[in-house]
Image 1 (tube, rainbow over the protein chains, first blue to last red):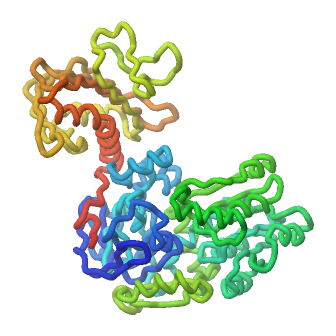
Image 2: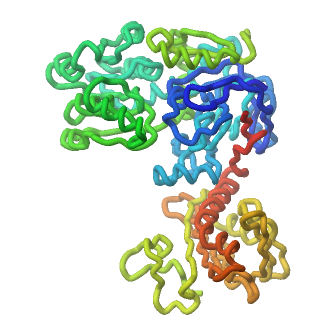
Image 3: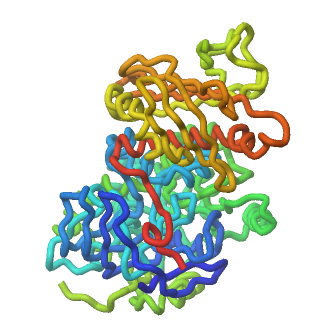
Length: 396
Length: 191
């Protein structure tokens, strides 16, 4: 089959690779009809996530048609259309039973789980197309994918619903939703969201849906800020104003009640600490550039709530621990428990309460995927989401 | 063998977590050169089921990566074929030294083993209904000198890694019915 493979920094190609097979009883093989390039794929493209190997198949936002089901899965049927969560979860361990699917104990193969145990203290879950830290599973920017524990993850989509309406259930919609839910929003709350990329925009949408009084979106790309505004947010362009001062004034001196960092480890910025981070990252002294997160912590009100859906992988320094402690902030974070949120979010989409199709700016074939990565990386104002169609346009 | 994971006088942590290879005093069965490995994992299955699966030693190669084959000789004796570095195999005979159904199995290599070793696996009810705490403790006496170097490498450097990964696979198999894999080419295609 054809698949998008990683070969090095800013070097992705479409190669012919072996077709996946059913290996374990609970596996399924999915023929991929739609798959997207995620902002976190750019961390792989930029090689800021370690443990990628040349030849790895990328992609963790995908959906398609079930073409083969292992003997241990009595739930899925050949021919069903499914969206697949990027987190691979067994459904039977201590964590999965509490719906903490992104903490699954059993989906990362025993050998690769060692790396995250050393880095983070405990072994992390498996995920599609996201380095060998998360298992080395082949991703879904391909014609076909093997889905382990397919009786737990994939959600069946009714006929008649277009791919593009439901594709983002695989990652970014639940991620934006969990980011907002982690803010424990009260009706009087002002929520500030750093980053108006896909997750930031969905966090804006989710925070409003969860009843936030006001949502303020912070970015520097005018088009992305326009999208946030169209969703109902007030906006701040960090290139033009001092973000903390703007937030203080916009909230009558109190500050935002909840702050969401939807930027993650490759934060932009021109302040001294941002430049220092960039230099250190270049010489491998630190892995994560966290200028944005520092600003989030400083801008959050006393006793406020901090939610971090943005991806970080390593360590940082100049972390404002004093502000965090003295102001008594509460922090929630983590990879998304996608399986937990999919059913309710699918229902909201079917009822017309959530529409995520506004985000899609480009539709490409799988063969054009390398161009898609380059565009998404270099033209962030206009390119908000690239969807790939590995088998051409399909109708339902 | 006395309990190698018994508490020290200083704190409540198991000996296998010690930073320094200090040996407990008055433990005649643990010689000064022994390597001690301990690892616990909680598995959300009843301890009777876990015990029964483990007690049938022919199941062990399903989750112990370097164990090629275990042949049962009689109720307490078995013959082990284990893969070492560079594809070399090591073999020995082993005897069960304690067997408490649903709770504990202990074993020890018989005289003549190239690497003297012993181990035990305990199955304990977890608090808060989390299943069973499975605790494995292994001791090895790595051979000194030239002949044993390659074997020593397996038993001196790797046992902790091996035990950790084997226990993860045991948990996967018992909780999910399968062992997670992303092995190319078919489980995870790659260029």
